Image (cartoon, rainbow over all chains, first blue to last red):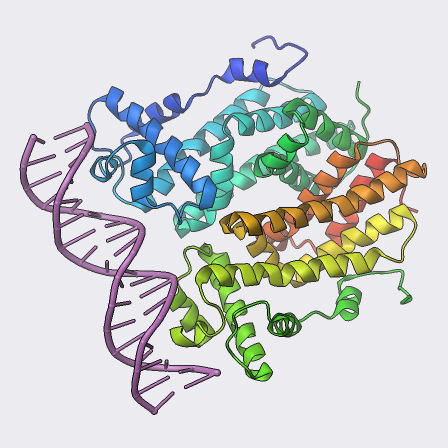
Length: 236
Length: 236
DNA sequence: GTCTATACCAGGATAGAC
DNA sequence: GTCTATCCTGGTATAGAC
């Protein structure tokens, strides 16, 4: 197990997971479950990064539906024709973007908590990991929240499953804490649900927190205070 | 002041405020700050109700941008031509819908807490009022959250102002509670911010709560528990 | 692999009959 | 007041040159 510094801030997290858009796009390119017509990895990855960055930027302004492919081509610096070498329809582009981030999120969160036993430490780590991840990948998180409803039925099921999966991580931790006598007997379902809501607020209302100059670490700390007092713990 | 039953559930609230889509549309019709070309109140109100109901239904499915006016005309049972007697562009329709609800929300919340002095009772009432209102007007709340970003700059300022206004209601109550020594010295800004997030979760993730069979009153009660324990109060 | 040019269609908007 | 018919922009998607 990697030895962990006591102070687990955004920088420490970043150094640990080291996720870049490039890595994510390379993964997508290697997957072969898509309709990318480009052969050379270097070219494909470079352009995928440009496309996704541009798509997230434009979509998060006025919504994916309002983003035209003409606009995307201008923003990404590629022609319309070139775009269609990377996806076969706007719909497919949407699915690619959403799938891209989902796998990363699930893997990173799971990896972050796997070697921690103590319920409170586990909860704290899960919350920090989620916040930091959403800080690093904010455009994707925002996009994912807003555009999931535009997916077809099958893809929507995946999205809902992911939402419930991360929520269940928190629920499991809380139940573990309760049965070990460390936490009070609270409603684990509702508790995990509001945790999720508070975590989501961080990336959905970034303008608000930025205006008030609240840092991630501060927000994380605040959430732990609230949860500690509710679940019957004191900060050690 | 209206005497208030100890148990302030959804039904009690509903009886008290008694808001209907028809009333809201009548208010809009009488406002004359819009481009409704219809003269007869009866006709106008009846059709505005049909239009807004249909628009909320369709928009909340796939987003306002994805809703076509042809689709709206079919859903509302009016022709394209008739629609344009009630608004002059799709953009204006969006603004009408958002303005429609905003005034109601601000008025109702303010009225609900105006005669209550005790900070905790005030907080409790504000939370209940917000939850019940979002329960009654769920389609509007969901729409408002999702579509605000599609407004032009000027209208967006109004929307942000409303968000901050309701958040400040909570902030003021908490600060009042702190200075009167009733609450612990918590961070009122962050506290009000998470209250807002938890309230919003109720109408944004309705499918989740319905699936788990959580009633509004139960959720309200849970939120008060969390806040009481954080701010240093016991349920009396 | 990428571009330009173009096909084709759906959407918003309006005119004018009833 | 409401409807039908029509206009026309701007969107997605593709063909074929380079």
